[in-house]
Length: 102
View (cartoon, one colour):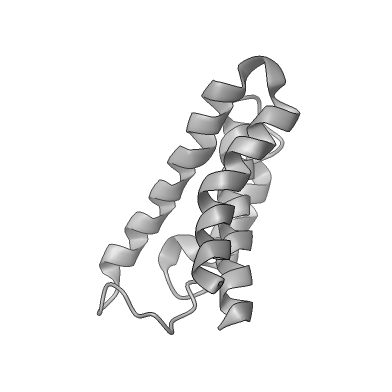
């Protein structure tokens, strides 16, 4: 169930959020929100790259609280930066929920 929740929040919720809040340009907003998953490239810096019992929050460089402050700042900029901020914070929330479910 944890895996389903994790991947639904990563792939399903961006599309739903884009459709609800950016109805006129929901396809573009969906792509931007989904593209923010590239933040997971920082997992390549970890050794081992994947550990099933590791919480990403505050472990990987782009998943730190300092990075999240920058993501909040993006919310106050014009599109597409605000959409990027939403996507990054949604990603962090998803990873945090995943940590809670471990």
